[in-house]
Image (cartoon, rainbow, N blue to C red):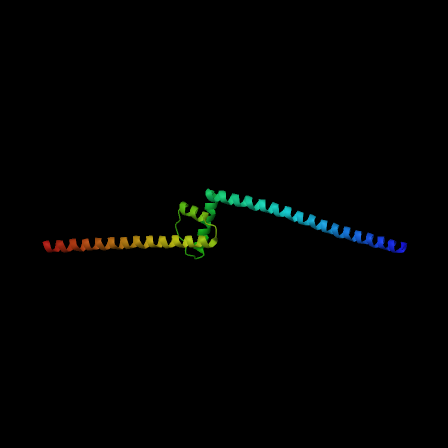
Length: 148
């Protein structure tokens, strides 16, 4: 019976050490997950601060953001994309407020179409003005010929 108890206690002690080893390895896993949770928390704070910074920049864009957008428009113009040739600071501020590249493209295309309509309207007005002037000149010349 004594032998049985000894073997039983030996088996229990082995079992306890294996449980300790298992629980200690599990504790190490908790430490690792806690460390990753801390890293995740640090990452979240960094991302929140960047979002706040971007939000504050979008409310009052700095001069460099306007310059960056002006340079972007110039590069796209040189690349042959359909963008306006002349762009105002107000339009650049509106462009700065847009978040995605596709939104910027669509806005610049809208401005380019608007600019092209404006240019064609001015050309049409100038053409009509020159036609009217030509008509008045021919009318005056015809009137002068009849009076003699």
